[in-house]
Image 1 (tube, helix red, strand yellow):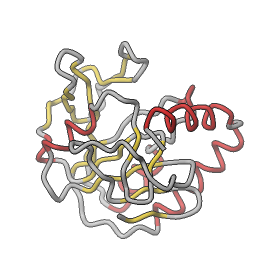
Image 2 (tube, rainbow, N blue to C red):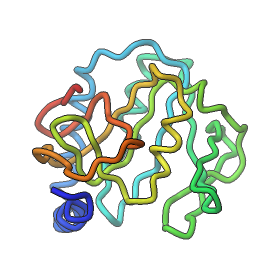
Image 3 (tube, rainbow, N blue to C red):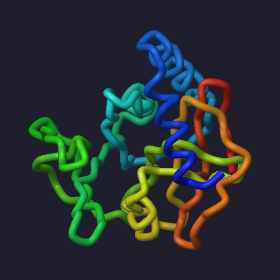
Image 4 (cartoon, rainbow, N blue to C red):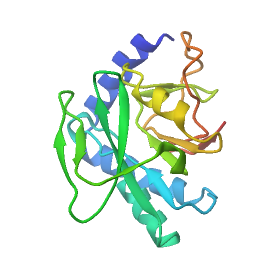
Length: 189
């Protein structure tokens, strides 16, 4: 399946989910995430979900990680649409978020963080395949960001749906996931 087709299909499938289905799937994501054996981490990159698009929410997973790693800190990204890059800011009590031109919540304020300091990245996606390739929203922000991270950064996707067989138009700069958590299981790549 091509990325453009996967975007259409999975956007429609997510939009069709009822609130009780989203809540159930979200609970199952957490259950399967809790079974994942992760290394100690001090800095995790996360995203704020687009609730109106039924995007999986990493917040319950972050709460669980804080319980396991009390000193862990979280960073959120702000995009630079001029060069399709992302800047990363450490979450603190004074941070608040505003939606950008794509409707994505971004941090206002906060201490800037270098990509190389990040241990784990939660990556938004619309679909993924059995090899760990992902279909995002099509701008390439996360692939550019991940290319600047350390080689050992863990890349975790969250999906309410199982993988497709394959993504036909994977590019050389696309970054694969290490794990994808679904309501049915954890996929490791």
